[in-house]
Length: 74
Image (cartoon, rainbow, N blue to C red; front, side):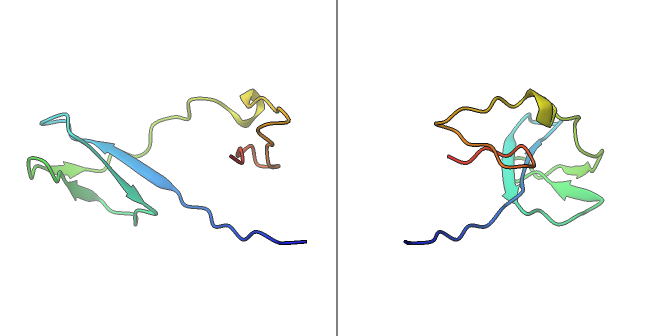
C-alpha cells in the first residue's frame, strides 16, 4: 500500500484600502504593516477578519472527507 505525505499552508489574502487591489501570501510572517504591491501604499495591519463559518458548519460527505479540525481533503 502506498502512503501520501502532505503539508498545510496558511494562505493570507490582503486588500489595499487605497487602490482595492488584492494579493495573497502563503504562511505570511506576522508584521505591523504591509506595502501594497499594486500601488505601493503602506498599510497598517488591522488583524484578521472573523471566520466565515465555524467548524460545525462544515458538511461531511463521502466525496469530501473532513479531518478532525474541520479541514476538507480534496
